[in-house]
Image (tube, rainbow, N blue to C red; front, side, top):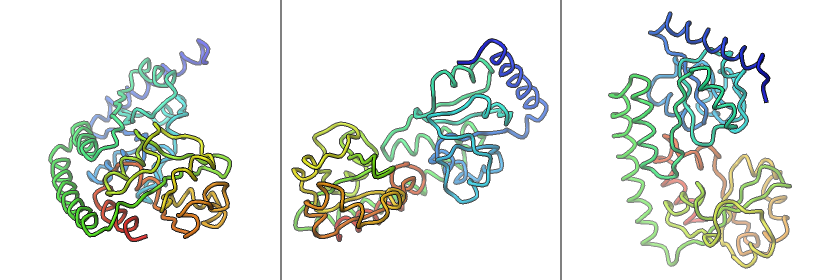
Length: 287
């Protein structure tokens, strides 16, 4: 918790930033908290407005050269306000709540966009960011391109599903480290992606992410394991991952059927989503 003196300093810093903003109103200073939001800013051609991003903003590569304000769930008011932002974009994942309240006290415009795991949510975020950054025409053009890609991708998924003898049975494993392996149930970004790809989430009977247990994965009997490239790297590769108790005893483990994609691309629901869909579906249907 901040004491009164620290809070006063933050308010002064925020007021100073607001003064700078009024003096240079033609050049907004934007901080993007959320990798998918940062991707949208770039897709709109508004990247020159960015003065900072969070640690999940790994794409495009140019974003990694911007000042890093930290992980989106553990933000610091001091770090954010030190960049004198005139606008902060964030999703519902941003926090902690006390920091968000401090930003409100400092009168920094903070816009929270819903972190929906749906294609329509991507279009809504693109539209809103276009409005906030003064690029509504660019947002409309982007959404038209995304929608055309999405419709084409869905047609490819339907073709794969029609030609398949049966629906692939897939387990998603989230691996931040070998000590923190979780499986994805309903209401997760991973579950939404599996549904869009036309495959069955074998953990669809649970909600959210749960700790991986040998009993659960053996009973689920997945034919394919889907994970992220970052997770696979954290595990040390396919072999160490399949040595996790339970995974080796599944049909996927015995056949070594493991598919991995970039985490932000797979789970972020950003502008790369439509192009990813047919690639994901093909990888899972043909694994």
